[in-house]
Image 1: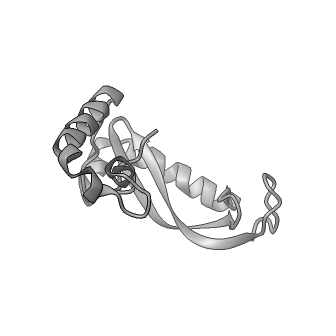
Image 2: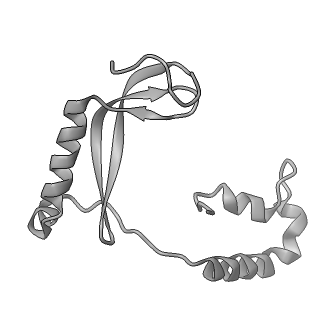
Length: 122
């Protein structure tokens, strides 16, 4: 293990296998099973030098479009602007307005449920 104590928060660092994302233009490549030290408190990651070198080599090689074509396509990435998100929420609320009482569940409204349905709001 590269470190045992997190430099950010002082938490315990454990060795895990993680996934790393590399962005190439509009494409994302997920590199799985990367060995890293991960703080159990804040999630800060620490990599041994040989892992960092290998990740850089992988990133350089996948910048070649021919290499990208050899990878397994697992999904799509969508871009959503703030205005589009606001319109989608407003459209959802118009449909749900008549059933607002049904949308209340443990103190959460339909809008809050939308935030927990996998949509990440930045």
